[in-house]
Length: 85
Image (tube, rainbow, N blue to C red; front, side, top):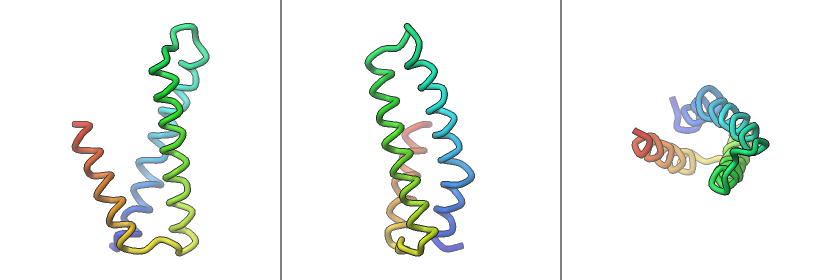
């Protein structure tokens, strides 16, 4: 599997669905009286991240992403996973 195919698979089946779910939770939280400034900032950061990955997926689907770029993004995603653990 190429880096581009691997990245597309991760984006479609893991990352974007997780981001969507988290955004819904944060959107609900930001509408409540319990919302903190940190919650609002996290919501905005997550919206930016989702837009970035939606753009990457768009580029993949339009054959505008190189193998090298896909490899770089996969490395960053792997680092994010390691930081999460």
